[in-house]
Image (cartoon, rainbow, N blue to C red; front, side, top):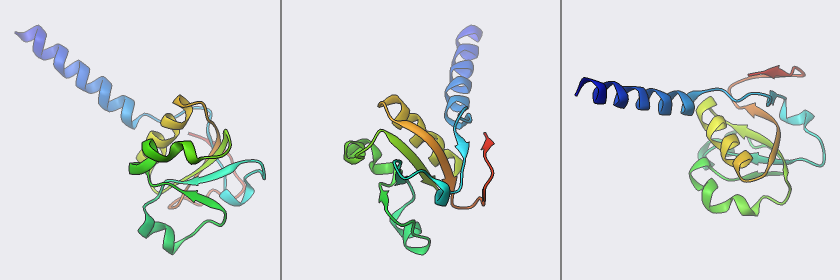
Length: 118
C-alpha cells in the first residue's frame, strides 16, 4: 500500500513538472524582429488581443489550438502568448505536429533585442 502511494505521488510529480517545465532552444525574441518568412501565431484570448494587437498575426487561442492548428500556413512559427504556461503548452503542441518554433514573445515581458534562452 505504501509503495502504491509513493508511485502515485511520483507519477503526479512527473506529470506536473512536465507541464510547467521550460522549453529549451526556443529564444525570447521581440515580435517585431521576427523574420518575414515566419508566421506569427497569437495564443492569447480574444479579449487580450484587442488591447495589444500584433499586426499580421494568426489568432488561435490556446483552447482552440488542437482544432485549428492546420490553418497555420507555414512550418516556421513565431509564438505570442500571455503566460509562460500558455507558451509552453502551445510550443510543445506545435513541435509535436511538425512545426519549427523559432522564437516566442510574452505580452507581459519586454524582450527588446535580446535573445534569452529559457
